[in-house]
Length: 418
Image 1: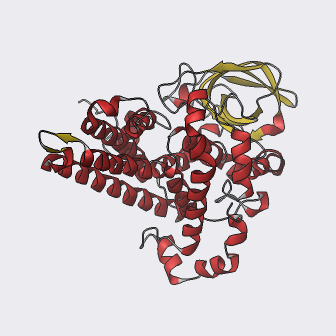
Image 2: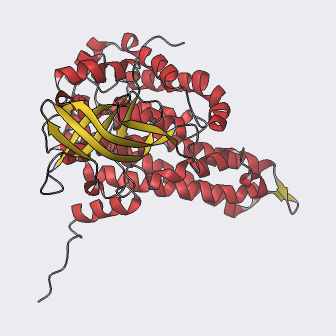
């Protein structure tokens, strides 16, 4: 097994690099994200872990509809892979988000889509707000164990009646003395059957639906929680997904992340990292589908020649490969904006929109070239046809991304009459 990344990275070299012209240009947005030796170390370590510790078990986990999250994440934590962009004070590497993108991209070597998604919940969906706004108590008792892989985290926002409409959630948390009493339900919760805690968005007051919400760390073994219902999904079957019911669940008031009433804002900020992670994590999956399709059509014969001998197939695969590379450039540019401290919502939303739609386009087009074999459950193109379809829904549906993009470009808003 590779040595821990935190030992391999040369911290002094990194600090000197931050003072370099290259780093200053990158931070100012003049240059786009550039891979360094340290990026490559994280990428290579992640790739090796995927190939040795995940891929040999994917078939088994897909059939079971479950992955051993505690076991896998504990190993990843020991390598320093769960806190790349988290503060050193909680056991992280304290690096900027470009290093996290290198990690996310390398997770794409996984032979399914469910495990990268489940890992991303731990690193980029349930923990960013906690790292940014959490108290010392929360960081010590929840974030630090998550970075070490000693606790499994979940993000609990969606509900039966509120998916894309985040502000429409109904779960309530009322303050009673030094506790919050939470009631409601959460749906489509990745890692939900085995997570130790969830970063949960709740209504903590009345009034404006964008200003009455809070993020609270909810231990999932608390009395009043029922999460026995594991959902039966079309794809990403190796990552367990649950429906969670909360009936008068009592949580210490100190489990509040940041300030009461700021939860919607915190979650919108947290979404930026989630959407970048999702965009980066499927780049290699799409490339694999294209490469597997080229290999299969090269040896599959029809009408006296290989399928790949048809110019249309050559051109279509070339076009799809070009689209993936364009998405990679967009993802890197959005990352540059994020680490420069600028508002990256527009580019993150564009990358998320493009990645979800391209995942559908690549897998559908390639499955067609496989013919009947592509429709078989065990083919790699069928695996990713099922798994990548979620990317146009989870983390903000395509239509939500288009709404954000339209608003940011000044196209949105109701037109006044008269």
